[in-house]
Length: 84
Image (cartoon, rainbow, N blue to C red; front, side, top):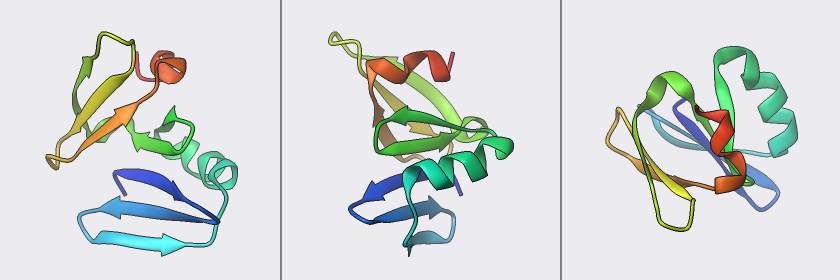
């Protein structure tokens, strides 16, 4: 798993396997995956630190995360401290 995205009452797990859908809460999966190096980067997204290739800050303070897989996800300035 490289990153996790909230999808209503579900979460989407993203990785080399594609995308899997699971009925879980973000708080629950965040607590479970924290041990594996996952951090919250947005109120609806978690990312595995080891999967991050680079980050680029926008003028607003929000940021884009490029993963080693090539995927680009956005992060919120409220959670910037989690990846520094």
